Length: 115
Image 1 (cartoon, helix red, strand yellow):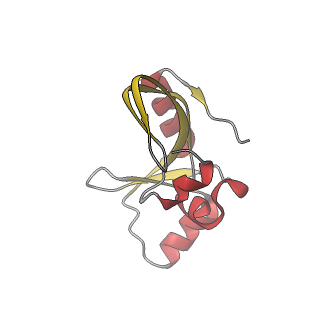
Image 2 (cartoon, helix red, strand yellow):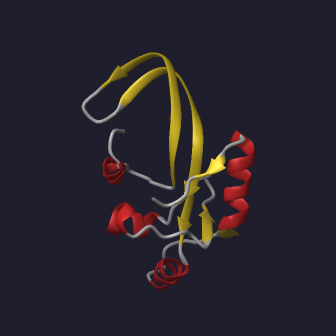
Image 3 (cartoon, helix red, strand yellow):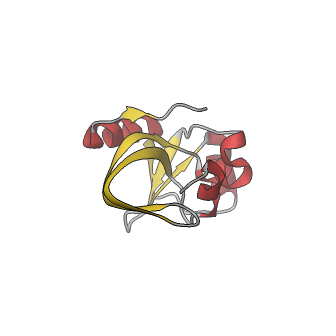
């Protein structure tokens, strides 16, 4: 996507980052399509904080809720408490730092720092 705020329209934001693109690259209205690409920098983001404030008030997640079908939802502590208060299912809760470290190690990239 071109702009950082365009990401707010995505369905399930969990990771923000930058990518390197090469080969044939086609620019579209909202972003790019490339023949080849690879992540450069990645960071977990609290899904609910991001939906509310975008990158204006980024919040690092404290936990990642893992659902039985594999979906993972990063949340800060206040949003985890809110999720539990309203009976949002939290079957498996993992520490966000460990999940992010695995993500960074898997792709051999650096963490995306807040701008």
